[in-house]
Image 1: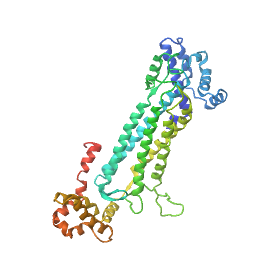
Image 2: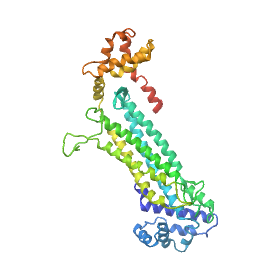
Image 3: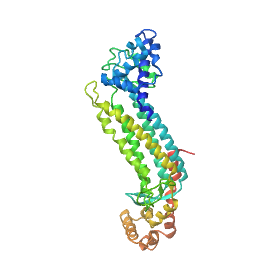
Image 4: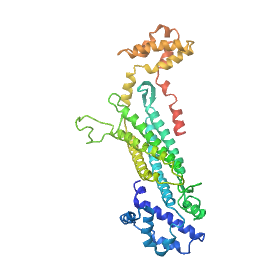
Length: 426
């Protein structure tokens, strides 16, 4: 990913655009025969970044500095390089090529993450744990379902990334204000085809920045999904929960002061990285509004958010994949926490059964809540046992029915159906 944004890679793409443009112009008779062969003398040059920088110190213009540097390899035919083009034709088309290449790497990272999530989801498909809402015990779920949900979310993110990649897969070689006054539109079509881009529908002097705003917004959504999964792992690794935790390697230290500590440093790091990726969204949105056909207020922004955001997200995806692969899962602690809930997770099915027996929802809710609150505030009571002793509930529900709805299988009966929704039939 860092290579995608290196100066030498940028100059390679700039040269590619200029060479393809010369080739297209020669093909349609706009420059003399043999021009392309002369231009290609500069092909494979190991660009001297320092020398180009020295030229730019004088020109105060990056593209002119590059063209000046190229001319010493090309010779007399260099006068036909950049014919009819403006700097933005090269800069914007190059930027989109870089974003396209970065997207391909991000796609590969998401594929690896999806594979890891799927493997661990099936491993723990039937590992029952307590679900929580507002951080409070709710009803049972399985750890596999948590991972399946993460898989589905990341699969949506992969699809979003693919749409965002299509959104920025455009190029523009339309000249000074986008009118093609000094360059044939055929040149743009030929060059874009060779770069695996589509010609921009209509540009001014730049490719419209709403495309890039959409792209960076999608990266921010992916980062936020990473944070959501990381936050779940962080919560599950808390000492009083400890249902899952990051791998802790031999020799690793958790605290400079407390030798016993095993801190969730990787997932905390992912939370911070997500903030950095989201930081690009507002500047990307503000880049949409430029003066007339073009200004360069967007340029300084994109020189930062292009590499920073894609490199950071690429790292975050790779790190989360490693966390998932090596995640330590503790089914026994999940059982312990289920016991700590004192059976209160059975309250809803009891409420529903009472309504099916003819009790109004209001009366059923009051009866169940009364017992639930007694159990909640007691150290020793068990919800099901208290329900079995309640005369009002016994008048509607016999013991066999009560035991049936209090089985864990009541909550997990559709796990296979949910897995089929997420992963399809095995």
